[in-house]
Image (tube, rainbow, N blue to C red):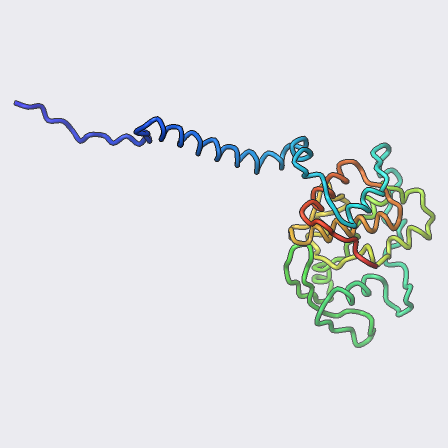
Length: 249
């Protein structure tokens, strides 16, 4: 009487039927591994990024960055106080409104001004450059914070980069300079805080080149320094946008 055997188990392993097929399999595996390493490694290894050109950039912004002083020593916030920059305490155009109203009026669309104060923005629409969101601004105790005015080069960053030696007049000029101010999403502004480009960049990748180039423009205008890690971060961003220009005033 014959012995009944159960169903034959099918092997899940791939078996090449010839030496040539085995070689081809090994080549394909090697290519996949090589591509994976080539894509992922530069993002995590500074040395590889340097060799592969990740820390090179061209254009006006990159050239301007090279003119900035690199300073790492004594890069501290000792003595910093936001009030020293007099933000919102000036009215250079004499319209009766501070710089926040001026920037809202510049950056928002579909603006409705206050009937009692023509330069004061009552409502409007912001296409936020940092997140890409559309924000419907409405003045009010609970809603005004939805749109905040960001110092592109943060005040504390400026203080550490040389503003600690300035006169009060120059600090007030910097703190209220429209070139360094943008209307942005309130949460994104809070998240950024005083971070440099080394530690924070806009969520919207498509705006990062414009953001970094404006920081470079501001630092060049006021002869502010950068740190080594900050400069590297800026170059890494500019690497993705050859020929990036520094924004005009």
